[in-house]
Image (cartoon, rainbow, N blue to C red):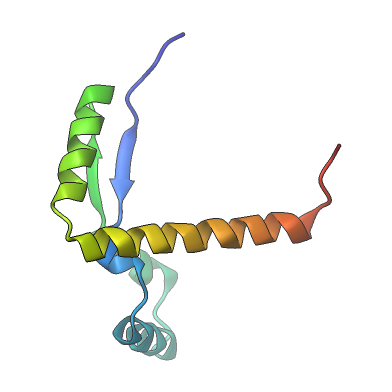
Length: 100
């Protein structure tokens, strides 16, 4: 089996959890009819990325990334990920019956 390091990209946890201010900003963006291209550009500015040269490199970078976050930011990221999982699971439940 051949294993290759993968590109790792993530959004800082502080940006994952919606706050009232974020919702207000989103309303302003929607109200201003910001194009998909402009929204994508803004999102890319917030992304933190690393190209790993090995699994060990990826693991070290990931550990460093998360250790730089506060406990609140890490919890916020976990909550955001859990909400995303719930949305995906709900979509699966309604899209098609499970095959036996």
